[in-house]
Image 1 (cartoon, helix red, strand yellow):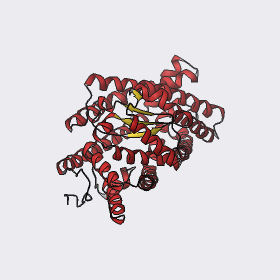
Image 2 (cartoon, one colour):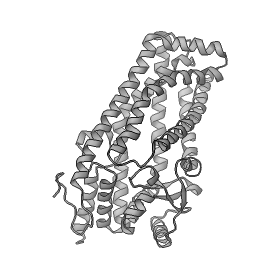
Image 3 (cartoon, helix red, strand yellow):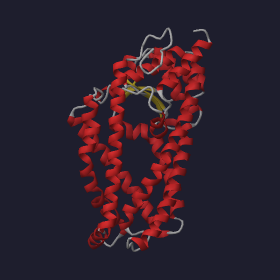
Image 4 (cartoon, one colour):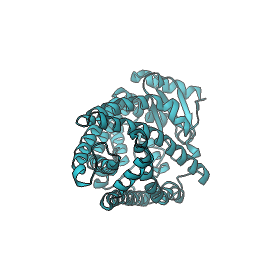
Length: 388
């Protein structure tokens, strides 16, 4: 029995590391505090802009540069976002580089971390400008129904990104190559056939260049769908354990969790845009906006989206945990290897520095997956029922 009160099932060849669990709890607490600081910092930043009237001053400045909304909207976004990026940079450096190194999870050099931040910033900047231009065009063209059309645009955009991510976006950060373990490839493809999922290939990717954590996934839609396995998973898990992890990922395809998730997220986006619509209408009188499409409304836009996202986060996590439990049940059923599944989850706890038994309120607010203790216990019960 471990200090968490959880016992690893008999026959498993891996045990929960009590010292790693102490570190995992401390690591998780620090990350939650940093998240709260980041949230409060962002809220304070938006409030200062609105209360001090800086949004109007910046609007007048960018309109003086160009009267075209196709230019002054992204200009406003740049000058509005740059100070927040600089203010937030020390926190990002600490949470993304210093802290993972302190707890032995990161393998990146500072130069590699900086390069990743530049890539991520460039990618999000390009995509963000495209979406911003579309949304503000809709605000100008149809101020009463823009939020409805914008929700449709986001749905289309999500489908395109999900389809192209494995071939265009993920390779910007990781190197993918076909898995050279022919026996494991055959085994995983047979698993896919049993699950009724067709995949284009099985690939390994270099997670070890960035982290000691392990992971696997089924990425893409249609012809871009592929199995990807982190080298940290391949090097530290048995083939049985890898199969159970992959069975969980394949379950998401079988249960159509990706398209369902896109629909759910699109519905949330629609609600967010409707809240933005109401907030902008109110801000026209309260904060001196010239109209719904005034670029000076961007702080109001960001604040409304943030509030809706914060309120919806526990609901979204509850929905995700439900789907993850279904995927676990599928993996246990299709593989018939509950001991291997329990061992895989235990290895993930040790290797990824994951807290196996967090407090209930933490699960409700922050966890998109069931706690690992619950997942391992379910596998243990199945093994016991089967006399394994």
